[in-house]
Structures are given as C-alpha cells and as structure tokens.
Image 1 (cartoon, rainbow, N blue to C red):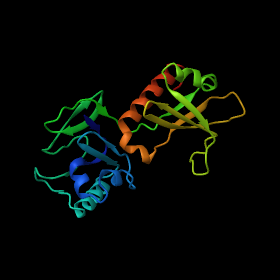
Image 2: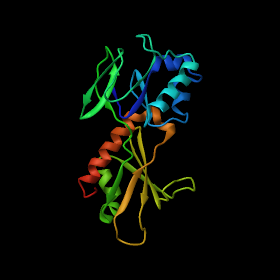
Image 3: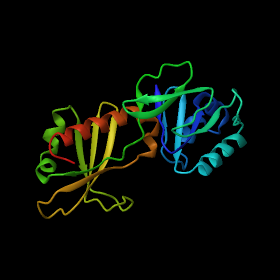
Length: 212
C-alpha cells in the first residue's frame, strides 16, 4: 500500500514506532497531530511547513527512533518532490504518494478529504433511501456543544466496519440547499483506509444526484 503525501510530510516506519514510542502506534495515533494516515508499513503525518515536520521528527528522535540521513533512519521528512532511500514515490490515481521500498505500492491510502458538498434539499430529504441502495446505514443525531461549524444535524453513516460522521449546515427552515462536511474522528485514525473508502463511495453517490 501507499500513503498520499502533500506539502511537508513526516513518514515513520510503523514497526519502529510500535517498538519505541510510549504506548506504540495506538498512543501516537491519538496524540495532537494533523493529517494522520497509515498503511501496513508506514505512518504519514502532514504539515504545511517543513519546520513543523522537523519538530515532530525531533520529538520522535527523543523517543529513540532514528532520524538522520542514513539508510537506517526510521523517520523521514519529505515533500512531493523529494524522497529518501528507503521509500519509493510516485503517482496513484493522480495523487502523489510514497510506500516502503521493496513493498507493493498497492492501493492508495488517501488523506481524509473532509468532504464539503452543497446538496439540493431534495437529496437531503431522501438521503436514507439513497444510501440504502449502496447498503449504507444512516443514523441521524442532534449535534453536541462540542461540534464546530454549528451543524443542525449529524449524519452517522456506516458500512460494515467503516464509519463516517457528517455535519449538516444551512437553514433548517426552508428549501435551500444544505452543506455536508466530514468530521475527523481521532479515535478512528487507525481505520483510515476503510473509512476513506466509505467517504469516496458517499461522495460519488451524492455528486451523481446533484451535489457539488
């Protein structure tokens, strides 16, 4: 498998993190880091600046991971135009990505797209029936005080083990279009592949029925 990359990326050997980071990969995935994805061998954390990536890498070095220019390094800072000896890089499905050298690039693990779609009110009103055609279950919930962007409803989609939590914004009292945005669930970062596949399925379905 391959992890998508953009801007500045910290790439970490998963086996090294499991062995050396306190609490292993599970604990790291729950920490205050942005844009986390993983495949079978690698973890990717993304930033807008190289300085932020180097700062995280230095923190990992303090935990015992190797972060240097040698082939034995277990952490790398790369962008879309650079790589290191122990990684391969290329394009899959028109996305820039990297994977562990010697492994099969396989399927792409995409960065959470945070879908933001504008949907016709008719689509929203019939959304249960629509997603049921793809064997996707839907539960509607009222938002909590902690939910940002002030949604008037939450849509909890599930398909097998995959889950997406989507906020609905707009005017609840008229027939105007509404907006859908995807919440990141830190607790589900290690389920990034299956959750991203559900996001892709829902995005395609909604766009085929008038969402933009």
